[in-house]
Length: 313
Length: 313
Image (cartoon, rainbow over the protein chains, first blue to last red):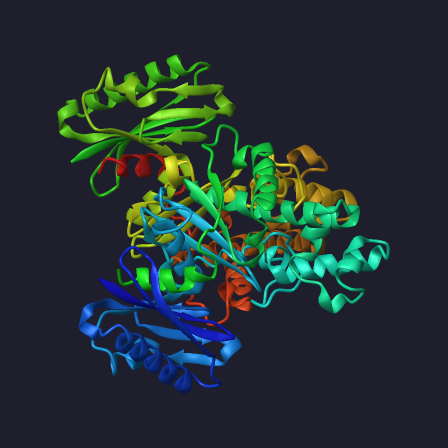
């Protein structure tokens, strides 16, 4: 049976028709509109387009799943707070039910990405997994016994908003020193720029064509691979921040696997080997602790659509 | 129906006969022996004494529950690692089964204390709770839907071993900057002594009879209540460490209630009011976050026996 997966992002909204094996049969994408009402209209049209293309009716689907950034109450289907899009208290599920009489579920985007990886992706052989998505921010997802653990009021699993440095960098959440402030792509870019300003001879300047505006989440990693010392220090420091944040989650959940996703995970084995070495050195957080397998997410940008569809599988 | 609760501690082993309402009918205590074998013999004798006193046989019990510090695998009933007592791979449940043909379960001491508070204590009106026990170390417990969440291999919930200050104070676990290094009674005593050495005029010197050896977890709190500025700074700083650590757990679990237990919780309302004010100021960790009730544990030292018995309720 097919399901529809909706992936709401700051730039675009992607809607996909997903098979029960987690394959995207077809997907479309529209630019994220300025208001929630417009976005909802677009989602309805996108879904209808997919159904039409595949000669399906809504009754041929197991349902519609939605992954959405920000604070989402999955029980009520309401997006409580999505500051990037200016959404507050948007009754997304109720609105879609006006057009589609089917099972409709919603969850936070990082939760949905984790579910996708555990059911169909890199962690499909594991039951208990925790994930960081390392992008603009740091999202978190928890799956126990193949089921999503969203926390009370479906408002937990904000793993990026745990402290790494008490009194450290100011965080978008209103506190300071959160994991997100040190492990997000945004943070890595900040760390890279600071290091470049302190070393005008670093290869990173050439890589960035002499302009800090060109620095991205790859700059330090790529120049570290070229043997640049300053880039290497940025990477080693970032790996320490990230590994300590991972070990914290191992001590809380002791999952079978920990998944690294989001843009930074594109570094693959290069990043993974360094994190594994760090975690090994600190005995995965505790003397005699059972080891947790550390994995790189395998579904990339499709995890949003696939995981959303998995909500109604 | 009655159950037996066994509370293994570094100083003594307490065994209690507990009613199904969570009341301790009778308890006894022996000094913790030097070897695991001696401890097991003592526990067997203590249980037999209680049964004899109350004219009960083992068949009159719902079972025997054990709370034990250190790393415990509850599935196998093995104490993997208890450095304070020098225990390693002690098959405690199997050993007790040789004498008692009944349901025997074991869990970590902080887990068991949390279970006691959620079933019989301060949090009995809540289903989802997280707890810190603030003693020599910082223990953690997680209860979701009135059930203990021990993490994978029953080796998670080590909430005291999450980072508060990256690269901070060395921790007994081998890492550095853990919550335990700033929020345990041990840490508070260290913080108090440091402040006293920087202020020879603090009232804390009088309270400690001029001797740093007399400083305990109450020194700063009691002198703060007397209006001593330095003591007040120690308390405010400790409250910030503790509150940030609590907010981290709210962001991960978003529980209905968070429980503060262990020796430091004896400060009651004085401590609670300060923590609540701090959490309120930071919106319980996230804009528009559902509020979590913060509670002081009510069962005190009995939580160990009562919670252990609750494992076999």
